[in-house]
Length: 101
Image (cartoon, rainbow, N blue to C red; front, side, top):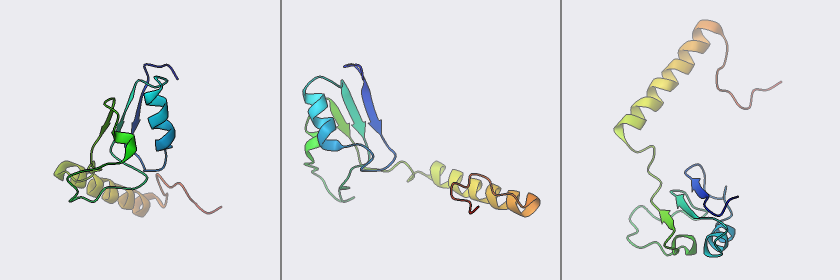
């Protein structure tokens, strides 16, 4: 990666090796990072989060709340209805990642 690269992880904790990321940021091999998921998630009530990965001034961390908005919840419900309706109408599963052979 270029030393100006910014690593973003809002998918799953553990996808990124946080210790290696912290070392890479500190060494200037990565420009920075933005995280809202972690190997060990902070409690929703936690005011302080002392995970070493977010101690760098070039790493920004937030609580994982991406699906907690009204808009996101509505979009998930709409997509669920669309998938079920598609199966009912066509017998085809869409977006299935583990279809048995």
